[in-house]
Image 1: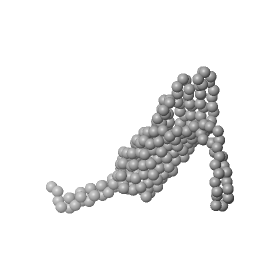
Image 2: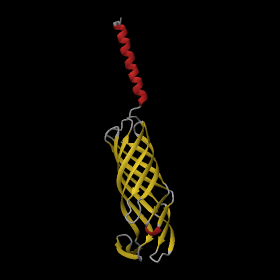
Image 3: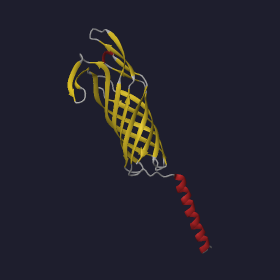
Image 4: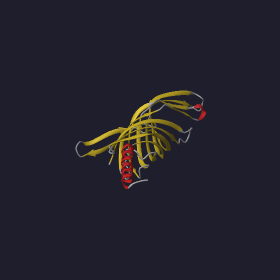
Length: 221
């Protein structure tokens, strides 16, 4: 038969047990808070097949990026993601008469994506998955015409003239999915590691499928 003392002891034990479980769980405090991060990224090599056996081979390259987002709750984060890489590439071009020639150069790829991130756990350490869409800017750095010039009056340096040259470039729709892990340190700083696969909608060839490994350090505020 339970006595009043035994009931009090059981209640105290349950309280201490719940407190211990809660302490070890390390629940996050990111809900309703902003966050930003700096990224070190590594774009993977990729191949694109074009018409009439033309092709483009991208080399692997390191780059950088940043994110800015808002945690709607402990599970859902919406963010803006920017990344920049400059991979070397080899392009195989086919002329109308069938002649083939190759170009070795460096391309600029800038990606801007709006993402929804889902954190599996409400804890400081959690796996996550991501999906998003946006635009990708690709610059071949190959001139598309003769150089031009422009002149202007500068308040410090007087009359200045400079030259410029347009290059073959395009801005295309793109989308991505990603998965990774996240760890928060004292609910103010976090680290993230992830793999992202993005697809760039190219108009005259198959889509560019670009994988990217990302390591991040960020702040919650």
